[in-house]
Image 1 (cartoon, rainbow, N blue to C red):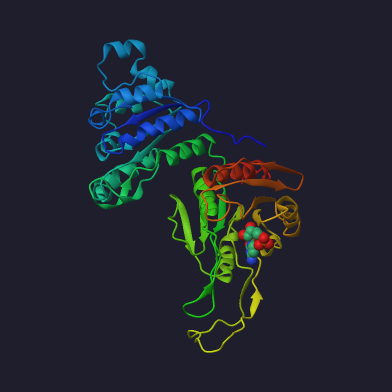
Image 2: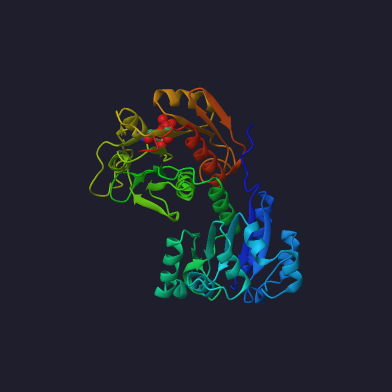
Length: 407
Ligand code: C5P
């Protein structure tokens, strides 16, 4: 079995922690980043020290923590310019509204902002603040300036906030931030590509209140769209009915039935370099959905179903076709069926997974898949859907025909 390429090995991560309640989560972030192979050094702002003690970060990072610019002993050990040069990646998490304002203005009034000005490493920020502060035009303006300077903005997520408000402004979870760093480390492998991903179930209406659906959660497809965007692709997500939030940087088109999904995908396909069919498309739909609710009268009723179009196979028949990735969910003999499907649907790559096992497949956050292509295959160990999505996309980048740079 292939090891999932971890990882952050080789990354020298300078983690900036500014003042916000989410600073406590950054301790876990340090732990996870090191687990993923990164070397970590932490710089705290004065405000951050009100929330978490530097000893916590020191213990977890295995390196001295710095906060003051004017600390002769620390400067003698590793000066701030040296620290700025040491970093191969900077992440500021949490990034408070105040920090973002100072950074956007190009100030160098404390160690963290000074190091940022002195560093040539890519910078990511993970904003965390009250939803009203996030929505303020001043913050939006600062973020826009930072984005224009090439800073990646990770999150924020929506949800309940420490102050009791609900809305956008929560820092992404440590696991999500480490994944974003891993994707960044993967080197923007999909930059310049346009990827269309279909995800979720389809609902086939029987009448205005009933439908035939399936248990697909959409999580695998959403994870693929999320990772594709992080790896630099322009990403369109055609989503069947699911309550999952839209991943950052992804254009989402909501659909309901297989036919709607086909139409939405066909609309996008001419411009697409890659199509990933991760949706659990219903194979059949009612021949004649009723316009009124079916009444409970007869003892038995018959449902007549008709085959739905196969979206992947339809695209595969086109003369100009993108790189095609499909999924095969089977309860038995997975690899044989998947290879058969790869050939029958003329796909470039198929991800095979066994469904029906506890804790894997549909409706679960972990999965176990084998990637299969015409003359090879690769079994990926059980991992989060996010990690698998990244591994799958790395294979897509690997196996796609090389592009002409003059394109
Ligand atoms: O044939 P089967 O449904 O098992 O194939 C699964 C793969 O085909 C998935 O990638 C799924 O998204 C795609 N598919 C499709 N259109 C259908 C049925 C499945 O694109 N009508």
